[in-house]
Length: 254
Image 1: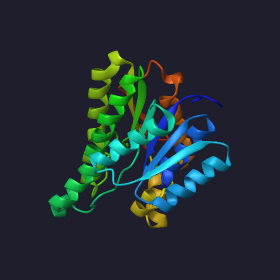
Image 2 (image 1 turned 180 degrees about the horizontal axis):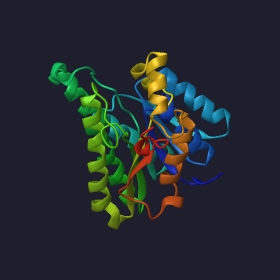
Image 3 (image 1 turned 120 degrees about the vertical axis):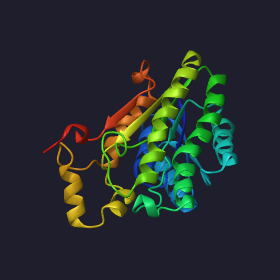
Image 4 (image 1 turned 90 degrees about the horizontal axis):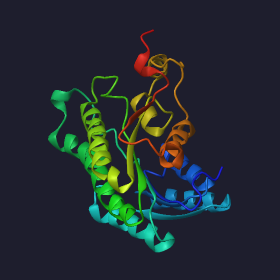
């Protein structure tokens, strides 16, 4: 407990799944949290849950494709809490799926905008503020899809999420001298709404489960603990990594 005392964090994609449980864990560990997503009602309920547990949080709803939204999230952190130490850029989308030769240009571009460009815009303003206060930690949510594993029909998702690894490395190298650490988590299958959307039958779920050495999918809380490690001073010498949190999917052939 208390690994994030006196820290201020932004969490995007916080209305559900990994983002929601990570925001709650950050708050439980002592951080003051600015939570972001499109859905105001879900953010408000999250803030209420955090406050009921003794934590401190504010919500700012908006679209991560907008650079002004990322400015507003950082401004909320500074206005309410005086600084920014941690950012978990987790908002994402599966994007248009199906045979790659049939994916529309608009669908592909939208996946890039939400999964990759939005993360760049977020980090652009987050890092600017972190440098003012002597450092910070930025964490992106990538995926094992398109890195250690490939599936048909998800080219937009794989390409956009893979791009985050290059972004992570570039930012880590550029801002390491200013004490900014930048890392990405690469989850395997996690029991979220997106996972159930991709795997909407028991046969599909059984297939995905078997890909993992642990022969199960993760709970969102398990990913949140990995994010907590990278966000905290426990990972003070960790930067530029693509951290697999995949239940052994990358090494499983049985």
